[in-house]
Length: 477
Ligand SMILES: Cc1cc2nc3c(=O)[nH]c(=O)nc-3n(C[C@H](O)[C@H](O)[C@H](O)COP(=O)(O)OP(=O)(O)OC[C@H]3O[C@@H](n4cnc5c(N)ncnc54)[C@H](O)[C@@H]3O)c2cc1C
Image 1 (cartoon, rainbow, N blue to C red):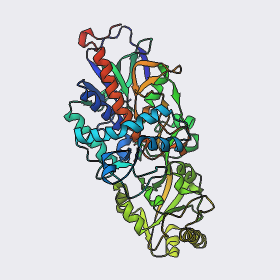
Image 2: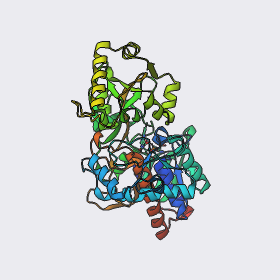
Image 3: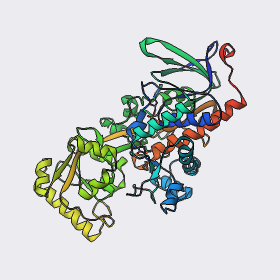
């Protein structure tokens, strides 16, 4: 990944706006560019747009939406922003947080009205750190549906999407203005295109072991459960162009990836009253603090393994998620009529597991807080038959990145904006701060979808004000 001088370059083809990456961030940015009547080209390295977005449950938090109103849920941008900042230890840029909290609701309603995405709000359970029910999802609760619907909407809106196009070079002027990009095509062929504005929507660096070792060392040996295309290209280009970076240790982990099946087990299994034990049959943390920080806690257990234990009531809730249904179909979810049978099926010491689950039951019946600080007052005791899944902890995606303002423009260390560069989603510094514990459920798609729309609108506006030359007139300086 390089930044090369634009001096002397001629681009036979130029587009007003080019977007690198066709995950949620890039597709929403492109839709916003088209909504402003401006042409846009999206370049995606994979044969089909998927990204981390397709691996997610596609759940996006938003306050004060019409779906919340219909369900009688009272919520505000201020409350949402306060939740984000509290979870992230007040580290994120408060202005960016407030911008996202204020714009994400209208953005989801725009995607529903203009592009037919049938969102609704999840009221079955509350995600850790959210003051109220505000996670919105599509019918299957899967990111595959999200990215497929966004891709279809983009094509219908006239967005040009070129797949099998891995961008490897940015051509820039000395002041940091990006004049065009170069990309590799299958069969070793190459192409170049000029641009008036460039949106980096090519996500973070979770798939780059060297960058993970440097910035997230506690998960250097953990499973990476995001998209392998997240190689840190935006970070490398941004740094070369003089962009500021922040919170590079920030990330979203997950403490329950079915092992060895490699299927994410919804954290509803925990928030509804389930617990995790290690190979010794002992609990090791307050699981309700959040699934993100639980990743490192699980990885630190013997063999990096834990067992999520719940019951049929909770399994019925979890079946609302495609991933959980797949886990059941794959045989990852064990059923046992009693604790001894559960111990035998999981290969755990029966005496310790019995003591652990009896202590949990006592806390649940007494509605007490346990020694780890977990509050058991809100969930009923587990009842047989038990369900359990063997899991490991994983890195899902990184949350640090290029510093952006509320207009999604990439900023230098001195706070000035690069001339025509935008970063969105995993490419930008998110709103989770520098620690895994700062990740509030939904922060990933919040900045993908929220910043994506902002970048598209601002970039479109900017190129309308200063049109990019086309064809032979394109940048030659
Ligand atoms: C298992 C899992 C579950 C998750 N669940 C949730 C959830 O429920 N809610 C939530 O908010 N977040 C969730 N997240 C996080 C969320 O998926 C991401 O934050 C979000 O999808 C990021 O969107 P993006 O568009 O920035 O990146 P991506 O969706 O990863 O898209 C980036 C795209 O850029 C392409 N690309 C990369 N480099 C280049 C290049 N050089 N040239 C061309 N193309 C390139 C990639 O191939 C990829 O398609 C989850 C993540 C994972 C892995």
